[in-house]
Image (cartoon, rainbow, N blue to C red; front, side, top):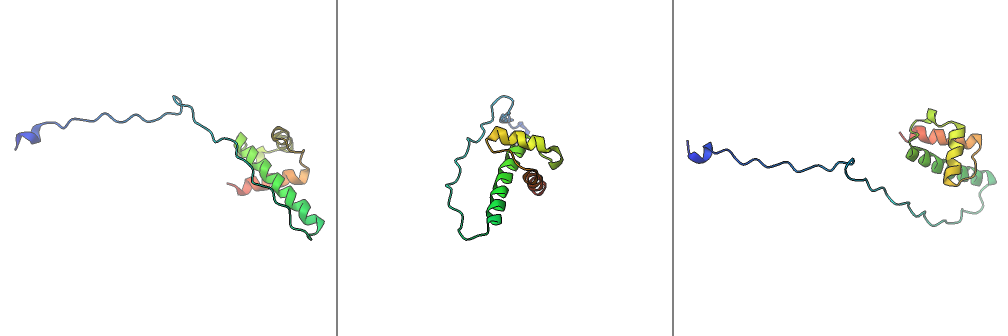
Length: 108
């Protein structure tokens, strides 16, 4: 057996892994909302009401998910309404609160 085969190979020290406990995690900066465009004309009034309700429910569902409310059964009407107040949205109706929970159910 050659002498080179008997020498132990130098071991490399493993590279350190980054730990979130030692280094703060940089969160994304608040995004800039998309430029608003006018809604299409000529639709029935009910369409505009439903459209705006869906947008509001989606904003609230995202805010709840970001705040740690991950399950629809955790999102009671008062929780949704306090989140709306936090993000600066008018207090939602019972119908909109139901829609928020539906969005959260389908986001999983």
